[in-house]
Amino acid sequence: MTRTVGRTGFQIIRDWMKDFFSGEQALKQQTEVRREREAQVPELTVFNPLKTKRGDYVEIEAEEVRGRHFVVYEVDAFTCNLGGKKYFFTDCILREGDDWLTIRMLSKNDPDPHDTSPDKVLLLKLQNEIGYQDAEGLRTGLSQGIIESREGDQIIAKYHRIGKSNKPYNAQVRVFNNDGSEQMEGSKYWDFFRKLDNGLEEYLIVDQDDDGIYKIYVAVEVPAENISVY
Image 1 (cartoon, rainbow, N blue to C red):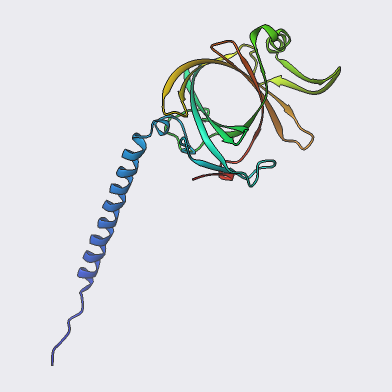
Image 2 (tube, helix red, strand yellow; image 1 turned 120 degrees about the horizontal axis):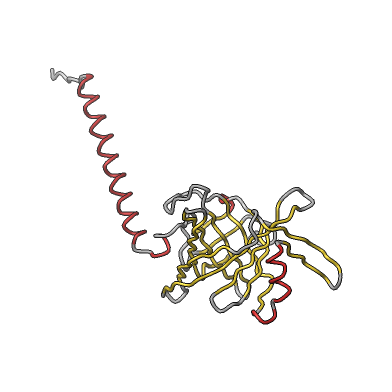
């Protein structure tokens, strides 16, 4: 009769440790491969916690855009110096047909360009675009720290500057264009907010580019987990 000898306790532990470390090594190799692939995608080398790339599809679980499928058209990475610290945020410009939308990912107060969790994610909708010559009234509001939205002579919304300064923030912008090219640009921006009747905050953001053009956006915050990228 042939006698079958089972594994000893030592052999079981040895084999388990061998499988464990083998799996751990495979995981490390997979992580290294993923990082190498990401390093080859320029827009993944900047602060981009949602890992949006040009050509990706994006779905947003939010009112007015629910069920729509946007395509990432451009990615703009901003770097600002505030109080001696670098602060990062990134705009993901989306397109669906003739409709445009921007996701703005904001870094935390103690910023890290490699952080994987944004402090806030805002949805920006372009409301107006004004040349420098036509923006005298806007510049007055920017300098006073209050922007009023009007319909005729009636004020329908009033936005107050965030923070104590009415001066613009200056940023350097690394632009990842839709055609695959890149460029550096300068930008000035001002941020305002107002309280809505439901207790939430609505933001008004004014950007000015190197050509002096002002772009006015209205923005609301959405949870990062409500955005799907694929």
